[in-house]
Amino acid sequence: MRTQPKYVFSWVLHLCAICVWFFPASAIELDLQDPKNIKNVAGVVAKNMVSVYTGNNPGDVPGNLPDPYYWWEAGAFFGTLINYWYYTGDTTYNNITTQAILHQASPSADFMPPNQTRTEGNDDQAFWAFTAMRAAELGFANPPDDQPSWVALVQAVFNEQTGRWNTDKCGGGLKWQLTPLNNGYTYRNAISTGCLFNMAARLARYTGNDTYAEWAHKAWDWVTDIGLVSDKYAVYDGTSDTNNCSDVNHREWSYNNGVFLHGAAHMWNHTKDDVWKTRIDGLLDAQTRFLSQNESSKNVFYEYPCEHTYMGNTCNTDQKSFKAYLARWMADSVKLAPWTRQTILSRLTPSAKAAAAQCVGGKTGTFCGMEWTTGKYDGRTGVGEQMSALEVIQAHLLDEVDGPMSTVTGGTSKGDGAAGTGPERGDDPAATKPITTGDRVGAAILTVVVAVVVIGWTTLMMT
Image (cartoon, rainbow, N blue to C red):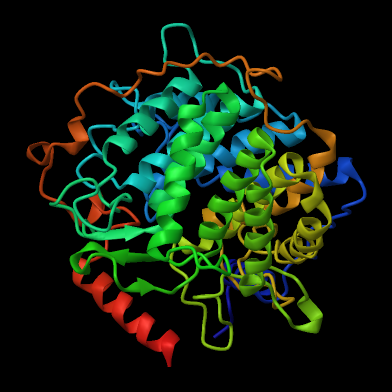
């Protein structure tokens, strides 16, 4: 039977869609010697990233990303948008960013919104605080007078988290989760204490108050004493207080390295103490774990524990975003600790070129994938992939901007040292509700699984 014209037309459309998938458009043309080009490329990547956001739609919640993205990554998302404004001067997303941060700051002004506290972890809360700190350090427009300041929000989180410093076992450190009803409560991971260290270091530099510096020293000493940061500056995932933190999970993630590098850079800039220079250099040396050694992708970053192309990429939604924070914090470190410039750019530059070469997918033909080392598009799209590509690309505008500010060098956000010292709804187990699948955060995994991973990974690393 003769095919009708309308069916022929439909068939052609489907064929065209298949062609776009298998034969994508050329990669974004990135010229790292041309600031205007970098800004244009960053604009494309940012637009694709923001297209995923629904929190500014009628009936949605400002600051929330849709499934499968957890609340903490939404906080990181807006940190990337502040960074985008800082590097490019583009104010397109500033209004939704301010709206999101202030909404998620919650009535208690401490990033403990009622719909998150029952599943919130210390690291989740800290990533929103990082975004507020970013706003203060980069001179992002201050909130209205009837709203808490950017620095006060960070101080609230800092005060609450130092109040959770737990010496019942392990001699200190932060638990992963906030309440015993949350899975993972017995796990003490590097990122939670690393976030506290990072906040303390940045508050010390921003405010000049050495109480924060004392806490930065305390957090650093604990992670090194317990073995989460090795004598070779490898940063390991965590340990369990069920055995008094005697076994360490030796898995390494790029953002764990980055959160300590960034904090150490702030501490060196604040103190000029050579001990911090030694630690910065050690952390940079330890990054080789995450650098490709293949000749075709030399010094390109990849997420070592899960981004093994020969095994199949097993990175989950959270892990796909880790390189974003590493790139962001490394670029800051160039400004804060200038001797790191050559080493850091020798890694960010090939990574940026490789990331841009991945930006050929999705509905626009310019969405970015994750596997920068392969030289071809991996077929993945998502917030983590976009954030990572955007941060590593826009980092190459660092010579166009000043470094993070302090109150001495132009910072205008006014602090409140007593913020967060009132009663904490989130630390009251009675305030929690039954946890549903939709409520789970990226940090929520079964405690028994954590214990098995700690023991299994430690055994593997020792064989």
